Each structure stands twice: as C-alpha cells, then as structure tokens.
Length: 452
Image (tube, rainbow, N blue to C red; front, side, top):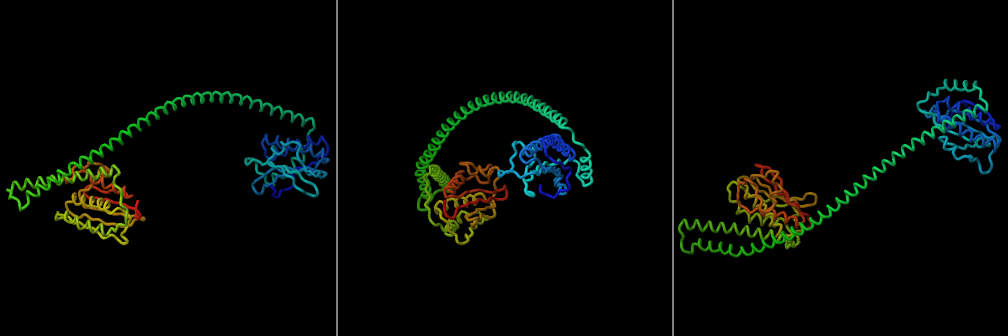
C-alpha cells in the first residue's frame, strides 16, 4: 500500500465542525466514483467523519487528499490522507472510536513534514471499472466541478443511511429469529435421534457383552476339547505303538530265511501284514508327534546348525526312497556360510517330510532341494515335478487329515504337512507352497539366521 500514486483525485481543507459533513459527503462521492459498493461507501464516509471530528478537536483541522494507489501494480485501493495542522501530543493519535479500524482495510500513521499523517485504505473491487490514466483524469475533473451539499443535506443522507441500516438490522433480526426457531426444531430432532441411537446403542452393547461372554465360553470349551483331543491322540498313539511294533517284528520273523519256509501265498500275505503294520506305525508316530506339537511339549534345542551336514544326511537317508527309475533326488550344497541358529532335529524332520512328500507324488522328473540367503533369512525350497496342487487347495493341505482329491498316490495320513508347518512356526519360520496342477510344487521354508 506504499506504492507510488498519481495526483490526488480530490483535495479539501478540514477546519470547522461544518467541514466534517462536507468531508463525509466528498468521501462518499470519491468512493462511488472509483467503484466501491454501497456498503463500502458508507464505511469509508463513517470512518472519515469519526477521524475528522478528532482532528478538528485536537489538531485544529487537517488537509485531506483522496488518491487512487496501487493502480499500476494491479491492486488498486482508495487512499485517504489526513495531515493534521498541529502535531499530536506525546501519546500520539488514538481514534476516539475503536470502530474506525474495522471500517477500513487498514489504518496507518505515517510521519511527514513534522506531523503524523493518518492514512486510510480501502480495496477497490476487482469488478470495478479499470482506473486508466484517462479515467482518473476524468474523475478529477468531475469531482472538481461537483459542489458539496449543505450540512442539512448530508445529515438527511446520513439519516436515510441510518434508517436503511436499521431496516437491514431488523430484517436480519427477523431472519435470525426464524433461523433460531429452525435451529431449535433441528436440535429437538437431533436430541430425539440421539436418545433413540443411545437406546439402540445400549441395547447393542448388551448384545455384544452377551456375545463376548458366549464367545469366551465357547473358547474355553474349544480349548478344553483341543486339550482332550491332544491327550487322546497321545494316549492312543502310545498304546498302539507297542502292539504294532510287535506285529512288524513277528512278520519279519515269519519271513526270515532261518524260520520254517513259507509257501508263496503265505509269504505274500505276511508281506501284506508287515506293510500294513508299517503304515499303521507311521500313522501312530505322526499322531504322537502332532499331539506333542499341539500341546506345546516340544521345546527347541537351540544351537548352531550347519546346513551342509543336514543336507548331507538327508541326501544319504532319502536316496533309498527314490526307487522310481524316472525320478531323481537332487540335494544341492548350501552356499557358505551355511549356518543358522535352530534345532537340528526339528529342522531335519521338516525337510525330510517335504522331500518324502515330493518323492511320493512325483512319477517322473526330479525332486530338488536348494537353500539360499534372501533378505537376511535362510530360504530352503523343495521343488518337484509331480502332479501339482490346485490353488484353492494350497492352504487346505496344511489341515489335519486332509488330502488333495484325485491325487495319484493314496498313501499318507494327511498329518505330515500340518506337523511340518507347526515345527516351522516353532523354529521362528514360515512354511508355504506355490503350485499348479501338472506343473509340480515348490514348498518354501523361511527361517531366521539367529533363531526365533
């Protein structure tokens, strides 16, 4: 607002009380000429009359100038300078009415030639006619030719403005009364809705509390049932292991060459007995292992584990299972340093289970196990070229006693993979699978390097 300005649009002297009315009138005329709306015209005229009254009383009057400032910068404002005839006292100038500063955009006190000039600013609307040099010259000529009215005329206009303001206030008061009534009605509706929602929420809360109580009860029942199932599996497995082992031993004795020779049919039947008993012993052992895992009775024995040793043992012990001529077992050597903190026995069980499954469900091709470090964790992958698993069965194969429908081999208990995943979690890792029918499967075991 301190940008350079052109020549004043109008100048006048403020000396006596009657000049206050003239200044008010001329201020309104200038405001109208530069494009201020009616409300801003009234505001600038009112502010001028308030300040003029102070200056006539305390400084003997002032010289007043009206300017169009900021035109060249594209931010035009109406600026009014009031230069008092005498300096103000030691306290400076303070408007008698605090409303003056609210009637204009800004009110500034600027030192100039030994006095303090009072400057008022009011922004000119952007939709007002542009203040070109030609238009400013025309406005100066127009304002110079216009004669100010009398004090009575200005008082009449002021009264008319006051009446209009009172009418507007009355209209706004009536509108406010209507709005208050509508607001009260709305509040009553909101209160009724709140009460209704509160009642419904309270009823819902009672239902939720009852549901939680029922869930707690069901959870306790499920926990008790799970513990009972684990105890039952452990007890039954333990009781079955001895007689099944005895059956296998007796069948081995009957088939021994040192015993009485058997006929061909008898040898075949003894072989069936021994094979069935072996399958039953596998099921018993799986049940017992699963019961131990579910009951939390398996505690890992944490130690440094060398994957090269584990892979070598599995390569040697499982090579005998790869009896199909079209299937090759490949156990790759882990990259150094092939060590991690884990439980060697439990880790070996998981990997043996995965390799055994791969050999069981692969008719031709290979079963391969490899390991590598990925993002600071060991990733052990067991892949096969077997029958594959449909995507909707990927999680179900980790459920107890579940087998993929239509699988090529009907052997198995459906307990190996659930047990392997439980052990993987116990070791701080995760076991997952990716597979497609006819394209084989890849079981991936992720384990932390530093243990759980």
